[in-house]
Length: 379
Image 1 (cartoon, one colour):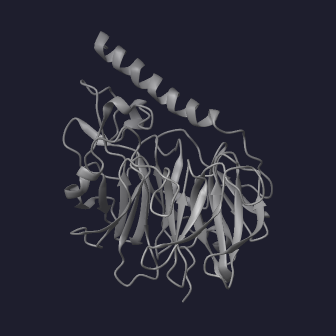
Image 2: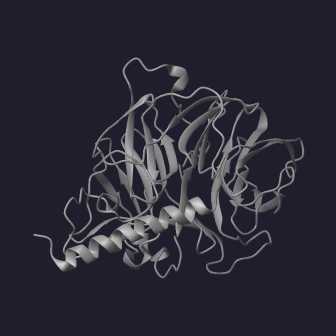
Image 3: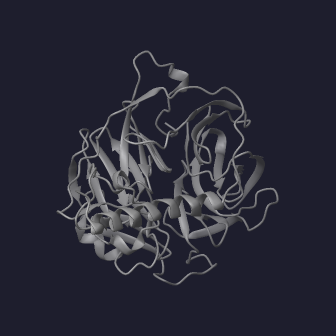
């Protein structure tokens, strides 16, 4: 029998789910699908992400996911979500299964288990709870992206905290916070402060790119010691400008791809002989709210919100293949906010709204040209 409290909880969670979807979709116009479309070349490993929270809690938004290896997948999580009591029927280990959108249901957010790793089977391996304090008190979403440089022999872990305007650099085992870039709760436009930073990327010569971000609309160039060199971009709709830099990717021949989130496009740049200068090349329009990017040696893959999809493009901006991502559960998404590929070709996608990460394995006989490879790195 359904009680009044259960009906009330169900109505509240449904409203939270609708609110989150509506907010993001209102920020975008539908993207343009061009080129071939077809089915996903992957199978979902259903219920792969194993719950490990204490009773009464579940995953928050999985905003940053990075596969260091097939058996060590890092997750940057926007805290956990406190479940209603009693837990509505149908709870399947993640908030989205009971109609909760963890992006908008902020009243239930608690800052715990913000950084952890998963094994190949989706079970938690490490919980870096010693660093939960870096997220506590956040009035906003907090952690946004997690990356590791392919050129760093120490495999340091970079975590971008959008709300606090900080970037944290950890030792690979999580035992040490090696560096904090930016100043907590102090936004700024100079070379040592950020305005809602979103991402970092790494050039082969050691330079670091910072997507800064939703307020400053620029990409900063740092040297290998993390000191400011210069920046490019700026707010606007003109060539090389941004309406929010959401993600970065680096490719061969000095290419830099920067997702102009609210601008609905990908801006392409190339490095020059001057370490502080890049040239704008072109823009690839036709997206709604581009979310994340992986660059391969001859193409790029991007996730976009409306319609929710993976799209492959060549370096001239031609759309080579698109597959749509369903919203329907148990395997669907509301937002593929981040994605990563391991050395075996397994794909992982973090959902910032349903609140979980899913694993995808290539379908038997899948066309290799339709599969996403690990990010390009100069060897």
